[in-house]
Image (cartoon, rainbow, N blue to C red):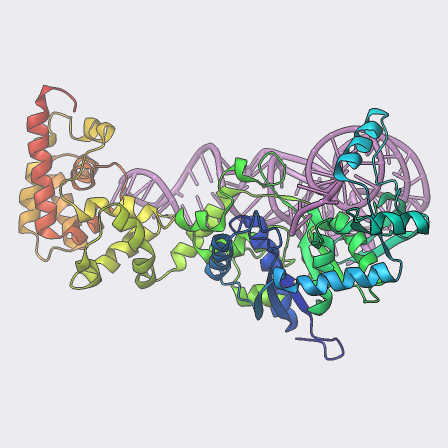
Length: 489
RNA sequence: GUCCCCAUCGUCUAGCCUGGCCCAGGACACAGCCCUUUCAAGGCUGCAACACGGGUUCGAAUCCCGUUGGGGACGCCA
């Protein structure tokens, strides 16, 4: 796949550990990964942990977990940006030495003051370069006096142009770019410096990141040049939007990848969905395996407009993936939510395993989330089920219900073998004998057996509950009707 | 405000580069029908879009300009 003449692509995902892995970050990682895998390149994970106050080890863990869950594997790293501080500072000093950067004595307070003044006049504020051309004697004096200073990059004149992998040719007038701070007054490197320094040292060939970084790109390109390095290719992915078309954020609901895991989404479904958010393989295929996505991936297919995150469609896709899952895998996936619902027992993995797998198979088509299995399985795992009020009122409350249920019980008691087909013919024969519609037996039976008006096919339900379970539930329903004569429960 | 990005059904998108095959295709959602013991699933059908205005051209969703609208960035955060 890799073009022989091209150097091996090296891409990176560089999250800052100030929060959990959110879907936006996950998608950025995913596109980097897809590109690397498609080209035979290297995918590097770099943790941008230089903001000590906001970063935490716990968040690093969370990001790693999120990526692992999605199956986005890195080839190098995780590398921690904080450990490269020496290189960052060294590059800054080199630029200072060559005049590409200069000391600035302006205090943040003073800057703030001037900014406000400019805004009051209706002007756009940009650092006015007061310190860019300080006379040598004054510069020396202030430096020797120990006056604090930061280091600023001297933005050259001209235009900065680059060819974005997704947006195409993009250009900026350098006059619109402020002389950015490289080293803070306390000597610590800032984002743009660290980022460029690391990307150079890690020999990154393609920087694939969110659209929100477009305005950093010309600054970074200028830094590459000042450092005598060849800039990489840049590709800016459109942002993921909320339903209000604004950048997806916490106020839109779940944004953390692991929240989706907890909510019952499959990693392969989220992966597939995220890949298709902003990228299309060009045909009408929507459900693709990772291998197919890797094979089909190209920046040609990456769109340039923001995409609204549609949970409905994600959920649909999750259902598609659920349908493809063999029951044996489902059993493991479903366990946490069963435990939480108090429905789990060791037997489900031992002597009742085959029965349990059959049950899952039966419920599969009706579930779109892993967590929905617990809801649907409840009637099968406990006999002391609650009847939904409307269901009971509609189908257990009618005058002949007790009698029909009793007759059904007696008929089912003699069925041999107690399987789906025999149960069905028994019920239909009974209906004919009683002169009622099959539905008049089926509907009360469904409520009696499951407590609800919605369930898998009733004969399959009977078969899987077994004769004993079925009769017990039928009896229980009859008692319920007799006792509940005081009115609707 | 300044700079940058973007603009096809409600949503994700195909088509746009290389104009005609597009009175615009697929998917989600929605509606209806079929199947049917319910609900799903499945099958079929329907609803629904080229933001607007100018050009260029025999011909524009596709190319150009403008307008409008939306978004992002404007930190000694990353």
